[in-house]
Image (cartoon, rainbow, N blue to C red; front, side):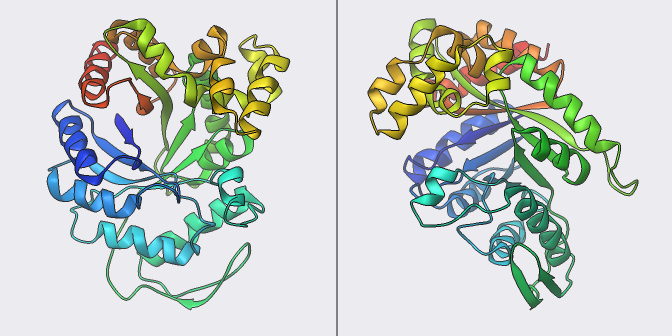
Length: 325
């Protein structure tokens, strides 16, 4: 499966138009970034589902902290109702700094994600659920029929990636470089070794930061903001894998923490852009996507998409077509 991520920082009508364009370009899923400070991804996903014919729709890595996991499952169920199996539940631990704005402690993220997935599946199947773990539920059930909704877990570290390989329907691995996807594929394979025989093999998608434009320099410049957040929070083994100086990455992270975003973006190095984004012309991006697909089953084309969103959707579709020829 190949999909595209849209960010609800933009007006809903614009996102719907972009989703229609994405379906026309051959993308099979349109997922919505999930942050409290943007528009509600479920409302936008419903509008997109009404305007499109076949694409899967849902949140990209909604977190089970700013809403109770049972309530989150019900929101997914509402999206799924009457959608002819077009709903997808993207689930992830959320961003620690964003959740801290809400005074929410992101405690035991792996367990929280796993328990949310397991409870959601039982609720979708029509069960009444009692649960006592990272959250509590007593006799919780949904009073309407849902059926099966695939759960794709957003992952980056080894433990979450391995867990997703063991339990989830799919893995949205946050990576834009073939070396990272090769590593992720090994972790997913480790999880699959312990996977129940009743579960189909999980799908590994490269959840890649993509910036594509006719002008290579403009595409790379547009990729600076997402790359800054990735590099500033990257673990030392990831930086080492790409030969990125830890002090340089720490400088980016410190400037982000200080709220000096312009300085943080300016501190992003060419090596960081190469490691943490697929940025350039359609031909350049196609080469990178082809490298990702050597290790992944599909690609989720993520932010920023490009300096011009409307143009970028079409160019991303062109790059994906070139990558899969």
